[in-house]
Every structure is written in structure tokens, then in C-alpha cells.
Image 1: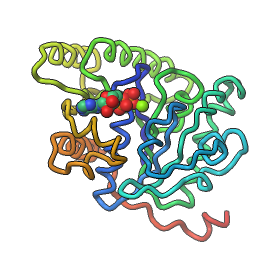
Image 2: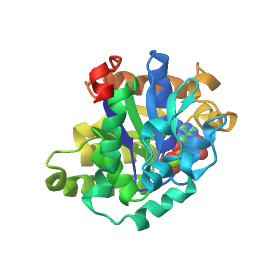
Image 3: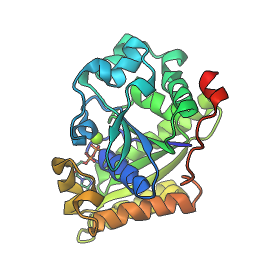
Image 4: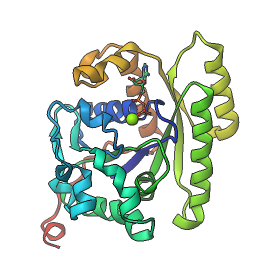
Amino acid sequence: MTRIAVFNQKGGVGKTSTVLNLAAAIHRQGLNSLIIDMDPQGHLSEVHPNAPGAASQSLFGFYQENKPLASLAIEWEGMGKLICSHKELIKVDSIFGRGPAILNLLKHGLEAWDKTANTSNTLIDCCPYLGVLSLSAIFATDFVIIPIASDYLSLQGAQKVEHTLKALEPVLKRRVERRYLLTCYDRRHSMTFEVHEQALANFGNDVLKTVISENVAVAESPQHKQNVFQYSASSTGARDYQALLDELVENGLLSLQTNPEPSLASVTG
Ligand SMILES: Nc1ncnc2c1ncn2[C@@H]1O[C@H](COP(=O)(O)OP(=O)(O)O)[C@@H](O)[C@H]1O
Ligand SMILES: [Mg+2]
């Protein structure tokens, strides 16, 4: 089961759109993902038609009340399972310190989840700053997708992520796999190509070949509480997010294998 964090230290670069539509593309292959909204702004949770409003029923319940992730996940039609965000999540950075226990808590929670749930992948929508929440998402995941809206500030945000991931290598004792994804790609603007070239120069083979075009269906679908495939299956946005999934699968970064039914032994411990 692959765990993916979608992170950039800049907001408005397409993190939430990428989690929403990549999970939807995976669902169209007959698989369910666990989707975690880790941004206290809760934009992803707002796309769910009836997300619970209480903090204790959100990811905050996992941190504050030690609730298992399985007790917080709700069904999301056309998507998989969602663990909602809540604005209280912002407190996680200040309440629990920054030690290894809190930074590894999500990882341990997901290990417990994997033993009992039959989702195929986990996708985490991170907040646009580096703190306990984003670090614990990175600690818990196999690789990070870093969206770059095709402008210079997003590129700068991505460079900060690159520095962070390099600095984490001795701590995690592994290279954090990452892929950079150009989003809001508007071929009418020369800046788009300049940013793309710069991204290739900085991040080389870690830049995905797929780009996500600037597309009205991607922008409009959340307000209708839909992903881009539900809103307009024939849109450029739907095609691009399908291509993203195909590229990740072709490169062995994501598997479309179903999680085998949990064994009795793993459930009973
Ligand atoms: N490919 C795209 N085409 C058009 N608009 C997009 C695209 N990707 C994202 N957007 C819009 O840009 C804004 C920021 O995207 P979002 O996914 O919320 O970014 P983040 O989660 O990084 O803040 C949203 O209004 C979203 O609808
Ligand atoms: Mg977001």
C-alpha cells in the first residue's frame, strides 16, 4: 500500500485538487484510497457532501483523544474513505511539541489502519507550511508529490521542500522519494515554459512528465462537491489526472493492486 503526501510550502499550487482528482482516478480503477485532509483550512473536506463538523470526528480526534484512524474515516462516494480536517488541527503544532513521538504518530496510526482496512493507497493533503503536521505526513509516506503552479513563487516553495527533504535524509535514514508536478499549466504564457525549464534544471528526473493544464473543470468541480471526473469526464483536467495516475503506475510509484482482505491473525493481533 503506497502512502503519498502532497505538499508544497506555498498555498494555491494545486495540492488539494491533486489529492481530490488523483484519488478519483484511482477509484475509477475500482480501488479505494484513504484520503486524509491534513490542512486545518479543510478545503478538501468541504468537497465531501456531508462531512461531520465536530473536531473529535476529524483528524484532531486522532491527536487529541487517541482515536484510531479507522474510527474517523467516512465513506466518500466516487473517492474512497476520508478523514476530515478541522480548524483545531492548527493546535497540533503548539500542543504536542516537536519530538519523535508526535512526528511518528501518524505513521503508527497508518500502520494500524493498513492491518485492518482494505484501501489500496493513502493520499494526504498537506497544509502550506512546514510544521508538525506536514513533517509527520512526510515521515509517514513513501513519496511526496510537490505541485508547482506554473509560476515563480510556487517554484520557490518547491525549492524549499527540496531543501527540507534533503535535510530530513539523515533523520529518516532514507531518501524521501519525491516527484514535482507542474499544475495550472497554461501554454499561452511564456512564464509557464520558463518555470517548467527551471524545474527540470533544479529537479531533473524528479519532474513528472505529466503536466496538469489550467482547466476550468478542475477549478469548478469542488464547488459542486464533485471531482473532475464526476463533473466533466471528458475535460482536459480529467484527462491530465488520469495521465498522472498512469505515469505513477508505469514508474512503479503506485500500485493498482487491491489490498488483500485482512487476515484474522492481523485483526486479532
Ligand atoms: N489545473 C487547474 N486549473 C484551474 N484551476 C486550478 C487548477 N488546479 C487548481 N486550481 C484552482 O486553484 C486554486 C488553488 O488550488 P488548490 O488545489 O486548492 O491548491 P492548494 O491546495 O495548494 O492551496 C483553487 O481555486 C483551484 O480550484
Ligand atoms: Mg489545499
